[in-house]
Image (cartoon, rainbow, N blue to C red; front, side):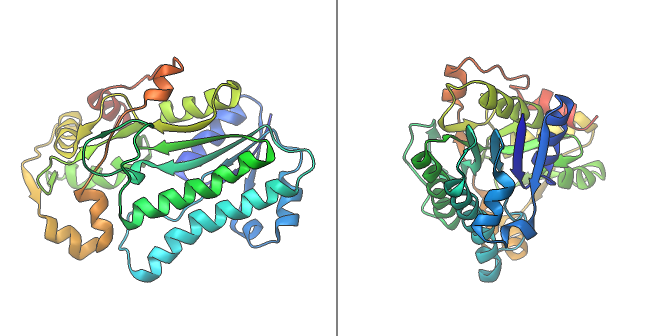
Length: 285
């Protein structure tokens, strides 16, 4: 199996690459320089691959200035458009295109399966919708296309928990805002398993929520992490502090989406980590 991947050096990409190479698959990374080339040259790099995976995107965990919001947008939508344009030019097209998306597409109110059309009227919601529209154009070329709306990814040596571990180990951990905001998450091992399943199971196509079947809250995550590392979690991070630090990006921490992986479960996908405590315990070993 030959897999071409953008974003191969990130936390998700690195774990996918290891899993693929363990199976003796060849992984060909698309780097930033490749994305500055014309679509014809990028097409040459993709030609002959079995699957293309699109993970590119600038980190969201920083202050969202107007300038950085353009970086967030271009690193996702423009990158996806370049990859899809290259796919159009290939004679022998890959069997599969998987593009990453985010649960930030959904409103922070209510609960959401893939059937939900209650999208967030926010910068992140609109960005994610444009991201998916750009990716779905690959279907016009007869390529089986899968979009994973990923929850917050947790796991060892990366993901959301890594930035939280130091303050929590110092006894400075606590809930964010009122702590009641939804927290829909997925363990990196289940994420990798879902990508592998999508590659090997031709029934997979369209949009899937890639989140554990039991979402929690920020308070639930906080308690799970405190329990895992045996530290108190009685402190409180006020909303205004996050708004000063992250600007509009604070909404990612102060709001959340309650999301369920209905289509994955319907396909018979089995999650290894379905509860937040077991997932956090494994991630901080």
